[in-house]
Image (tube, rainbow, N blue to C red; front, side, top):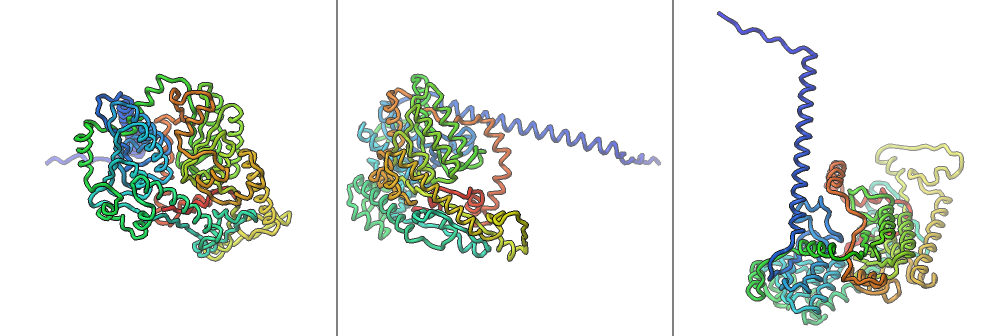
Amino acid sequence: MTTKKEQKPLSFGKTMLASAVGMMIAFVALNVITMLICIGMMATMLSSSMENSTPISGSNLAVELDLTQYVGERKPNELASLFGENGGTSIEQLLTAIESAAEDNRVKALYLHLGGSHTDWAQAEELQEALVRFRNSCDKPILAYGEAFSQAEYFLATNAHLLAVHPSGVIEFKGMGAEAIFYKGLLDKLGVHMELIRPTSCSYKSAGETYVRTDMSDANRQQVRSYINSIWNYTVQVMANNRGLTVEHLNRVADNLSGFLADDAYMNGLVDTLCFAQDVKTMMNGQYGVTKIVKANRYAENVNQQKKQEYTDQIALIYAEGNVMPGKSTGATTGVYGDDIVKALTDATKDKKVKAIVLRVNSPGGAVTASESMTHAVREAKKVKPVVISMSGLAASAGYEISCFGTKIVAHPTTLTGSIGVFATIPEVGNMLRQKLGITTDTVMTNKNSTGLSLFRPLSADARNMLQRNVEDFYITFTQRVADGRGLSRTYVDSIARGRVWTGLQAKEIGLVDTLGGLPLALNIAANEAGIDYKKSRVKVFPKEKSLWEQVMQQMEEGKEEEIKARLNAVIPFYSELEEWSQMEPLQARLPFLIKIY
């Protein structure tokens, strides 16, 4: 009888060697897989880019403005384009598509595909102005269709020759309201006390009130009522004119919600017909001979490629979108980073092909230091080339300061601007640490105010007086900046400042902006100021977009941080706002950014 030879266990050295070899193989395999994924992503991007740059063939086209997807201020970057349907679209691309479609004999119609509440009031106003120019310059039809319209989307859709809604669709037509969020109750429960310090005259500067009140102050309620009435009165008049209705009728419909459901909307004249998307496309084919529908972003890219080859004169377009923050962008969040905007202005000023600069501002304000740096950069650039400001939905507080020295300021009637003022907030968390966590602190000082600005105890009287002087002094500096930039007296600026928010319509009347209009008007004004032909120039966007590889590597580095933030947002109410508050500089020039307008 034979027996199997008994197997000896591997020695320690052989075990370690086998483990090391296994780890090396796994490491190599992981890197190969990662490389293949990156190659696949780049191949997808290359394919998408080639498709967008390939000339559009054929005639009898309809250009589709797909507003069911994300709409941003600027063209989505290459990484964003790898996800979703081309990563969304931009106002810039949509405006280019509308303007070019009016003159293109191949284009027979514009098709507005709405729904999903991706379009805000400023974007709707920007596109509304473009559609008015389209209607005035050609006899091509505009057809609008959606399943669920926000009020801003409905405002835009009223420009269409045919406005259709899904038979089971809705239109959120209800008038305009504003809702502010206050954290004082939460901070009280946590044992956190917030000090709000602002100039004595800045009663309208209400941003810091979100941490020290549970409701709106009288001054804040007055200004909010003023600007939402201004926006609503303007937009309801436009909608009434476009639909051939009266303002009184539309207000009754809004009061009673009798335009909300599709059948009611049709009965009350808000829409022309109830149908499905395919019915609209069939109509385009049957009545207007449309045989091919092209997305606006692809159509715009084709137009831009042609301009790039034909024209050498350039207008720099710089986007300042988000909260004003110091330093440089990491790419994780959208923001107006001071160093980035200063560099963009400097680069555009030095570029000899760039004849003029348009600064597109969409910001509620933020850090004073970054605002001051950008304001100085605008003044320096203006000495060399025209710098025209184009205000989007928000250009308030620090967002207004960086605008006030522009050669010209262009705003929408619905833009929220002004809010010329400043405030400081200092939290005191000692009570929370003591009562909730049992943590106490003790001090040793060389001078009586060595810990006067500590977060662990109330502000000392000297510290509070110093901060009060600081905000008072900067308010004088801020109002003087506006006076110098706008050619007004500081006394007059003070009378319209005090932290008060104005709409673009109101701001034009009091001298804070020069004219009402959108981005195309700002680009035209910039071209005229530079003595060039806008139609024979092309737009160059600053700052320069990072390469696809740089974006991929950056996202891989920041992925874990974003995942953690997402998890915290899911379990902690308003975590994002609290995180932003914790990272703010003490001195802030910003709009009451937590007010939501519906």
